[in-house]
Length: 440
Image (tube, rainbow, N blue to C red; front, side):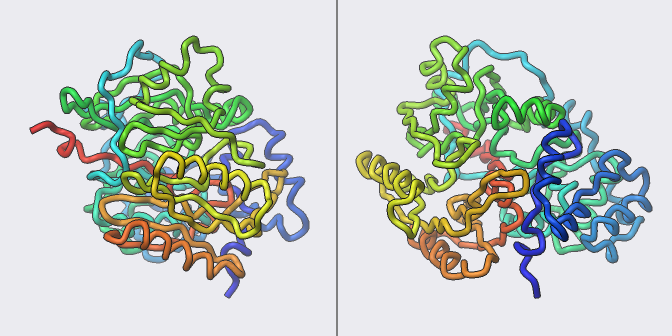
């Protein structure tokens, strides 16, 4: 049996239908010979003419080859009748849909709730137009069956077809909260708000930053998608405060639970026009200490990929095999910094030999073991099916077991998801349990 990483090795989960021509052309030019077979994985037809009834929804599932045999048109119609509309969600206050309207000041006493504290569920953006990712995301939802999955899907028959497919593939829809509406990008961590609590009142609050969207060029090329992601906020139970300060969530290693944030200097460059940026950023993050680090070598996005807080005072840091390389030196410097700050540092594999250049010239390191989803005593660990990586998968699992001995560890193959440079952590956002934020 061929590996998924070989079959889809040239696939990139990028919204090529919403872009200027040049980026798509670069991608096409990078595909050689039979590599162009991967183009059948981009269902452009359905982007422009989505299903209009149950029969065409089944045709969509059949066309994208995810397995439509078990999905009956009647099931799609039944699910559609139960789905809320986007307008319903807005009217209920579950969703905010706003453009701009920034607040001058944040919620005073803001504390972001770290991932190891009680969570109600996880917000996931279903990869509706990325068929190679469907099974990975299904596995992620199955692994989160101890909480609610807040699932962003398209409206109408297309969204109902996704839910019907999930149910036919073993997902209990009683544990899924559907959020039909406009669909943007996949990487919820990058544009979701920081959910937290006002430590003086116990009120559940969220700070919504403007979406930096990986830089000015991306914001221009994929403007329609970026606009959707900038307007959408899951707000149920939280009072939302908005700021013009731009953040891409990948720039920030979220809080250690005690007010410390580590972030790359890209945040400073993105917001250089904002006066008094650092104290404003400190207020909006609710930070007691902000640590700015260099961007990772050869990472065009300026993201933090191999560093992760997983418990109070405890952090995972990637450790490459080969000494003296740029990434080895970079992570050694980060490790020395964290040791000097008295964190308990746990090494996790960072095998450089699996880095690659994608069609179009994008460099990615598709092995990012720190890109886990951690929630309510369960940690979903990224795993990869590349030839020769088996020992690293085991070492990563063992690192998590050492770091989090009272957690259940569940490995999930993210080989295709991560080829665009993301992963399970990037493609989700934990939603805190509002009841746990209330003061006695």
